[in-house]
Image 1 (tube, helix red, strand yellow):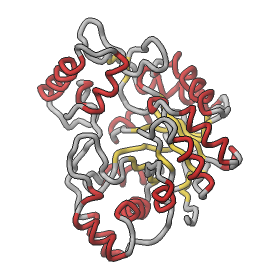
Image 2: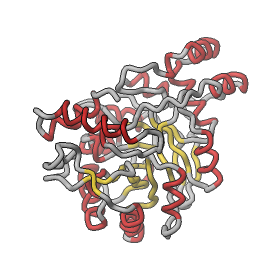
Image 3: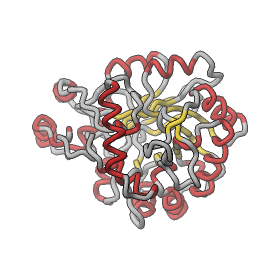
Length: 338
């Protein structure tokens, strides 16, 4: 299977280079996927409160028989709990659901804050005055200070961020006592972000790649289907997804392939080296095609949109969800095309 490659975090801990992603893994699937992955050699599970499946992730961990101390478990703080007084309660809910008393890594999932809803499952609270998602202003510094307290209490070993730009991290570093260990970002051949990756390396912050195949919910072209990727995979006798995993690792990133199919979980964990010419071919495919951007929040997270585009995004979401309940909003958000 895998050689068990790891990267060293600036917190002193090691993180396995390949982890099992659990986003969109459905009910009665994710527990078996986690169990199979761990029995097959995986030692890194990537979870998040907003995925709504941490109970099953915990079931899979326990069913695997692998000692908790041997598993690197990540989860993420959701946008509704960015206020300092809410951070620890969000972590406690995650720990309860996972059935563990600590996390190896806890990430701020998005650099956007929401008003706290009616409960932990109220992920997308609506502003009654506007009909849009209730975005509020909470500084990164406030949230990060509360994250640092979790490390001091021993509930979390390492802390990091997700979907943060260089500028946002630089601003955070002005007040942080603990440097982010990780920035989890969308990264695939169509969105390579080389400048950000290079800067993160210079800061000793590990970059994690999600959506490594260019997977998306918008029906746009996927990198895993690119003719260049297909040709390289065929020439190496490998699957296209395997090729993209190795390409990400050879860039110096942690990669988080997601699957609930045992054969694919196994295949994703196989190590091999891409020849330099193949690595270079893939690296030439960059087109800065960002797929995972919550345009309809109206927040210019990556500094890539004008105000009119953001305004229209919010209005489109309001129109699409006017007749829906709050519980339907997450599904509408995932399915809406930006």
